[in-house]
Image (cartoon, rainbow, N blue to C red; front, side, top):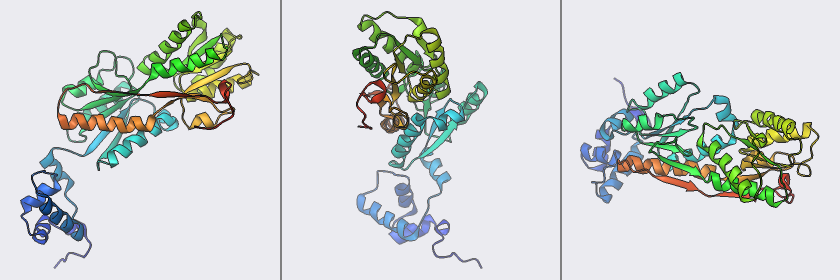
Length: 352
């Protein structure tokens, strides 16, 4: 005859918990599933019994009762190499993880780099059983995925400004304010031939940071020159290639605003290879204030955006949407701050 071993929590039944707590199985079920209609004394009694016996609720059964998986999907439409090589994603995912852990929820990371992979991801997320809601990142062009998911009753929040016309909740950093401050700083330091290395111009962040660059030049009375603009795709390699192209077209440039730290790091490599001194010949400012900003020589001036805070806010907004079961568009824009270091002529200091 089989006997249940002590400590084998998979063998503990709800009936045993009910007997130990002196309540019905229905009451145990309500406590396990978070039903508020249980008085605090009874709830504590059941929880003590659960802890003492090592009872582990059946996840599938709980999902059937609550219609919740206690999991959040995070879809990033970028190549795997970029996701794991860019500190931006690492910091945001850490913030998401912290936010979910505080709510005892799980993260399901989904990555797609092609139209076919995105269709598969969409089918997976829309199945209705895998996740309770979805956080979307790095959407390109007029991607209609946020609206498709929302139309199927899947709560959605976008990391960054959503595609044009999409009425979905989002959390973003102040891209315009941060980029404007970076370019203004370079101009205030006496630089007059300020170039920019933009992010992808099919993404809101890339478009907004370029617009801020142009706005700052106009505000200072400087002429816009298309030859001083080059797209680097938010990658180190793109930053290096863009800097080479800019130097070939405009050898008299004296400053660069790179729309990410990775691109700024690549630009620094190209400047050194061309024999340009930083910041004496060319000053440079990045965007993100990631760990990369302190690993370059000289340390990189950069626009600090709250990446981990962004992750936690994404979870908060998504949970609000899930629990409210409404179609309210929630918008959160986080402040940015320019951190001045040696690459733009600042003092030889580290992270503030």
